[in-house]
Length: 198
Image 1 (cartoon, rainbow, N blue to C red):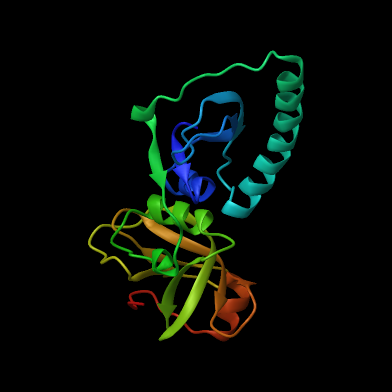
Image 2: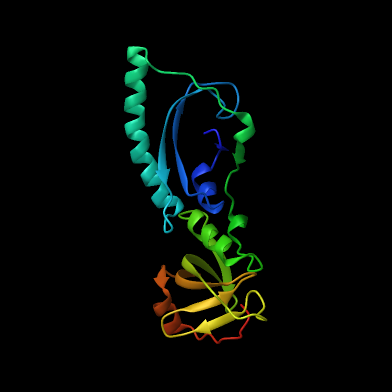
């Protein structure tokens, strides 16, 4: 706080491309997360952090912070720092529709969406007419003149899909009705061709 108030601050911090987040202890107030702040801890967001891994990091940091805050409340040294409302934004609830990948968006933005929406609701697309959840991807460059949503490259180990800017190389995914797998396993059972539009 005060930046992310609402239902899903962890996930939105990743989706928005923040480099750090944190935990804040605060006094209760009538508004949504608007109470005076007591203490806060800062946690870095790694390039491979997902909503799940960042939640774990924040839980560990928060456990230490609450002990510190309780001690200060007990001995009368806790402070009250009003929040600057102008710095805040609303971290809205997640929904399944958010995961529908729009490949006209830049690959960097989609890659953050993939990480931020784990473990739920997960980013997804359709490949070969079937829904596929994307669990791992990285941004790679692509040639000009390739339409977003077009497969730009296929090897035995991975494949890439053109985006509005750059391309998204898929490393881990879950086909409909199957368990999550790496791209190698997926390609062993699914024939993809460069130039194909998903």
